[in-house]
Image (cartoon, rainbow, N blue to C red):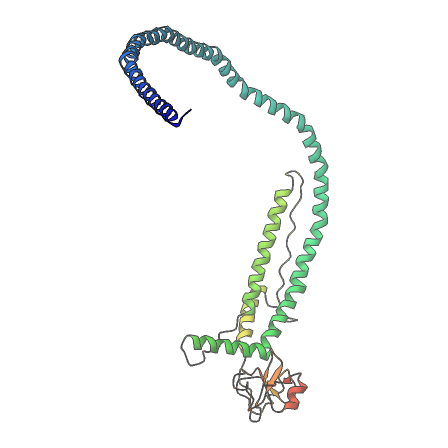
Length: 338
């Protein structure tokens, strides 16, 4: 085949393809026009036809269900009313029967337990009586020991401590500190010594109160027909000199007079040896105004002594003064390093 013929065939095929393309385009346009002009109106007609049918069906369902739902609701209310009317009398009867039943049950329980309670009380009563009889001598002995042994010892110990030089010095420093805090430069006068008679009177009152409590407890624990009589408390101890015939009520006044007569004198008599009262032996002095030559300061808490010229000498408050390092070391003090 010649070249001229091949070119003619190619041109013919190209023209055929172009014609086919144009025909397909026209066919698509015709299909769209058909859908618009034919299908759309019929779709609207179908919707117009179906909508009333659906509405009618919904109305029929509502007309069918609504009466039956109302009837069901009325039946439920009626059932609830019937149940209440049926159960109300039973509930009221049960509520009325519960208190008598509880009371009857409690009474039966008490009747059952009463013999055991009586038996337990009969068993415990002798034991309580025996325990009370055993404890009574101990209570009396304790009260007697408190009055005749413990209280005299406490009184003697109190008087011994009050007469110690350290106690007097501590009281004096306390008064000075209070005066300094109050802005008063003058040392206040020592307060009157507390009367020993007042202290003993308070102890007598406390003993009477204790006896009243013991008496009340006995009356509370004892049965009404036991015939038991409360023990009379012995008189409280009163510290009187041997051979004294004064009445007990005169003891507070005598003790007060004695206390006033024993007012401590802070100053030592003229010519007296100031070192006899010091508990640290010879060459020591306890007080705020040491004699000449007593320049070494001793601190009781640290048990160290400071000499003049040392770093802590001026800061140290002297509890005791010494006239030599040997006297301080003999009293148990050691020399401070600073």
